[in-house]
Length: 391
Image 1 (cartoon, rainbow, N blue to C red):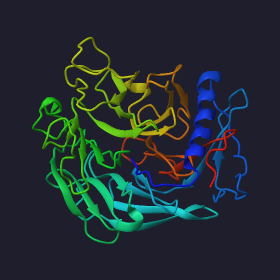
Image 2 (image 1 turned 60 degrees about the horizontal axis):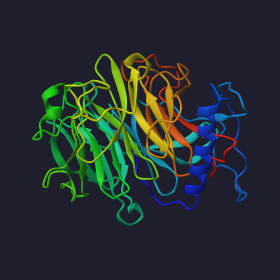
Image 3 (image 1 turned 120 degrees about the vertical axis):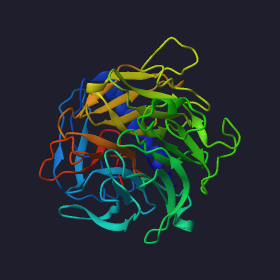
Image 4 (image 1 turned 30 degrees about the horizontal axis):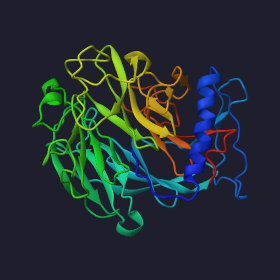
């Protein structure tokens, strides 16, 4: 997940990107690719010239995918710095990488800026989500979600200095560790947790497992939470990793189902999303139904980015992106469309960059994929004909 630092033309770029993408959703069955138009201020994108990939489509709609970085080991979270570079976590190595903003003939520069010492990587656990403080230019603070020997926890740090845990005791297991982290438009830090393989955690108000949490930068329960003194924002989750907000401050999250349905949910304060009583849509009015559900073989999505009224979710088992257009009330507009099916293998993170492009990571070296020689990679998606992704 990511923070939202202010950038001067971000709103206009997002709007242009969204218009381009919604046309794709409503009017075409796929995408073609091409280079973005020149920046209106006269500055070309500061990008490397590695390989690009195209997907055929109609109606002149184009999207370009550029490989920004390669040779990474299970990149998990992406968060952007004020200079346009990004911090990327590697799940198994416990390393924080800085990708860009400088670039060379092989792509953006990649360097290790931190190794988190207490990471105990196993199964789906390790160094997971990352968020950059909205006041980073002043406080230089970064937040991480990781698995230790005892639990999953959230810590804050300044790059190069030891992390300070701010919230501990999140249940851990070989599977279902959650791990999403990001600042909401209200300025508070949100984290998504898994049920750690114990389904009862999701409905237990005393457990931090199977929840979305909302906390202050010191790890305390945020004011205005559903229950005073509790960090819990929503309950009844099996395993949420990715979440994002649309410009109208609606929160959405992707969720791994068990054997039948994976979901995208609109996350509401105090909402109960039904796990383990419900998987996918149900008739019990106590639980919030998903806005979209897919068979697990077509989805198993981890990352989520919101571009105006378009949700872009990156899927592991499904090995594709799903593009979901939204109406003004947050309901689905038209049919979700798939992109890059099988082209890059397992896809994990999806993050909206300050320039309006979408960064996506592969996860082919996580023990469940078939890595290519340059895996794992960071991809940059630019939806052309809309002016998005300019520097």
